Image 1 (tube, one colour):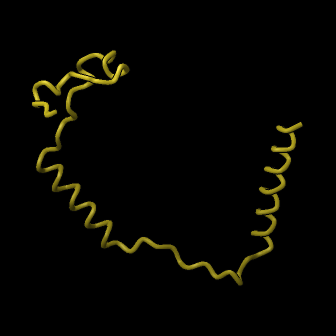
Image 2 (cartoon, helix red, strand yellow):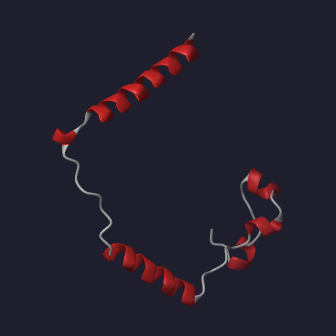
Length: 85
């Protein structure tokens, strides 16, 4: 069953979509060529940029890291115990 674009506009086969106003079913606006070109340039710049953090050396875990982990772990544990109780 093929539908022409004129019949597809504003029609809905699902009950929820059938309740929506007609303007909610219209097609989304298309981007202008200038906007598409700018988006492609931005994507190319992001691909070229080297946005990576330095690798983590697991031998350099400090006591502060351990304390922060334990504080978060205990806080979550207490919150769950209070929720269950």
